[in-house]
Length: 408
Image 1 (cartoon, rainbow, N blue to C red):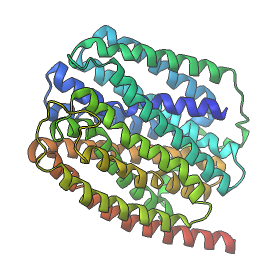
Image 2: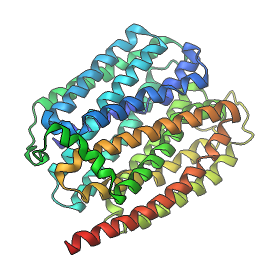
Image 3: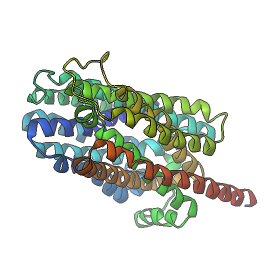
Image 4: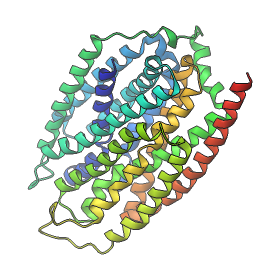
């Protein structure tokens, strides 16, 4: 079951984080503006938020395994349509389908982690591992898409053939899930459908949950603003070839993958809040170090991996410090709740993460259009400062929650 969950997450990792690549290809191949392309993230994230909000508390009745199978089947069908339709509106349809399906998959995966683990340490470890493999999927996606882009004719529609491969993998993963079993009895709380839906609103009344949701929103805002627009930054600010611009963005994914896989080990030795505070400070320092390296870069006809600006290698390393934050804060809040509340809580996580992703990508796209890529990325320092304050607040609220539990 864990293997099936990892593969499910990796399929969605490839698609969700292909927005930056598709934006670049849409600008070059479909002739859309950056401002118009910036809305593509919303077609992914708003369905994530809506479907999570409406269905998260009801998924224990459908079954987590069945929900993952349904999401993968919808995605396989949408991917199969992309090479046939060849239009920007088809990309919007695809990402809307991916968003709705990911809402089902993420709530199911996160809720299943609680069913497969027995304590907070195991929960944090498995969460970090699965999120780490998610980033491996992101990395694979960059190179998979780049393999189908013609370096001499990047706008050639043959790049859409990549979706046949993704559709096949999604279908095979759904078949693997069909052959697995998991005991989901602990996920049921016996509430009626209406009461289960209201559980999400009851959770919002808890100070710990409120501070956590602010933290999740800010984190995803930062990650998506950088990850989505990094290929375009590489192409237009660093003047790398299109194929290399997509491939170079994979350094960001590698950094995130290594950071999340390593976070499971670090969290066994370090207090989570000190680790995350250090990570945010390191992120800000890297922005101030790397972006000046991008200033004044001129087009180079011989640009290659051995002749690329230093910023192409240095700036994506921000993912190494960004990586531990999201799984760590998710684990903190889920471990503080009974397993029967994990689906409702994960629904809130997905909703606020989706809103953060849409906000980050949209604002960065607008700033990219009006003020340039360097300014857009410099302004990521503001949400980083707010995230630092949110992590401090999350630690205080978690201490109070632990004290209340101890007294009870």
